[in-house]
Length: 117
Image (cartoon, rainbow, N blue to C red; front, side, top):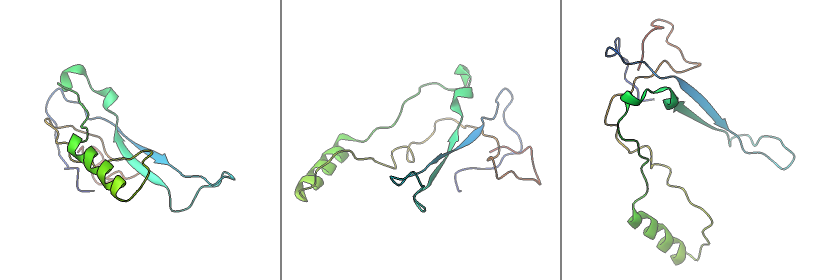
């Protein structure tokens, strides 16, 4: 996946957080799943963090110039905007501290079952 680094030990007092797969499906009007439109997201269970494990919590937001550009581009093409999404907003937010997580559910490393990332 390219975002995890395997470690043998974590600092004293730190506890690895769990991970959970979250799935989303698109449905046809008859209730059947549209094949090929499934989405999966691996989420860190941050609600298990102790208050001393994090300092300032904030969510990255789109820069106002990016929003203006999206509106101008839509106007240029006579598009009507209902909603839009900046999919990489959270991908590019650097972490200030290391976050240790348990092994990915459904893909455990059977040769090293106690390793964390």
